[in-house]
Image (cartoon, rainbow, N blue to C red; front, side):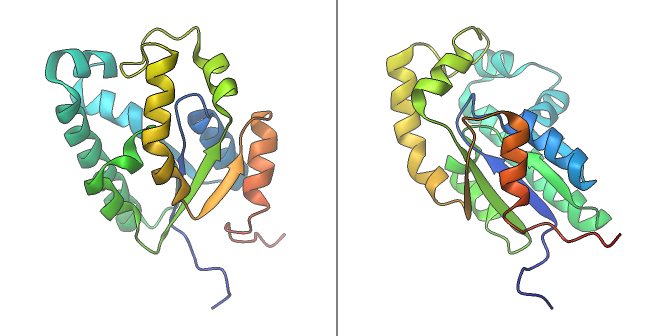
Length: 180
């Protein structure tokens, strides 16, 4: 076996606006893996938008669905033996029940780090983020989650074009080499 262990899942984590979904989609296409967006899976399972889940049922119910869907994604990946790139929600890694799932050896966790001013600029126009009310609450939530992001195995700067972020991830050497 080579020094780099085989990974079945590469999970992208980071705060809202860091580019998780966009980068995961581009990365999956580049390496020929399936892309799974955890937030989209939650919406499909609940038959409601994320803001609707928060307003009608609260954050605790959202986190319960999130954990169920994350476990399902990991199970499907193991069962199918088809590797995936997963874009996690901004708070997924801060939940103890998810931390347990995400520490498996077959999972590589990559933190898409982006400075707070850039994050604020990127999401300033977005109205449907249930945990984004104003800059003060945004900064407070970021500070609360930072320690969890810092636990990721890899850190990639995402304050550049998405394709440059993909290049940085590919340079980590965690994807199997394809023989041509």
